Image 1 (cartoon, one colour):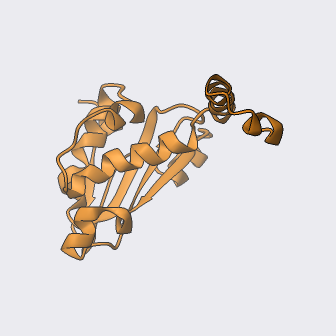
Image 2 (tube, one colour):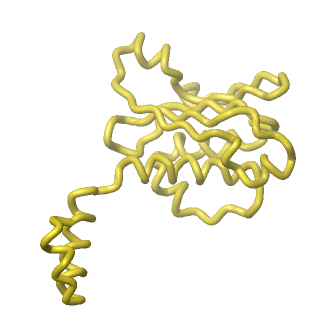
Image 3 (cartoon, rainbow, N blue to C red):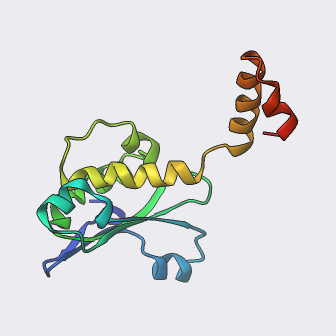
Length: 149
């Protein structure tokens, strides 16, 4: 039994579910972390169900997609905490969750959306700017070159 990945659920309305470290524990242990948040008000299924209260919060290693802990505060949060638990247990990062097809529309799809928020925050801006300049050059768009884009 590996207690590092023991999920816990408090059956309130909305439910509170978590696995791994939370912010307080990470700070107490001197573990550096980043926080990624996803508001349930962004979930299509949550909107359809009228269950937009809540969020997902994931702690990751700074600059990496390795999950240190996840907290879900939402309707039926305990039902979909397992995806984060499996990911942590088997060393799967947020990129793997993002690359997994999820049924649409479901509340559980919010785990993938959270991974998308993380990925968007870590996109390689410099590389994307260089690619933009390159493709504009290939298309013969010199106006972009003059504007510095």
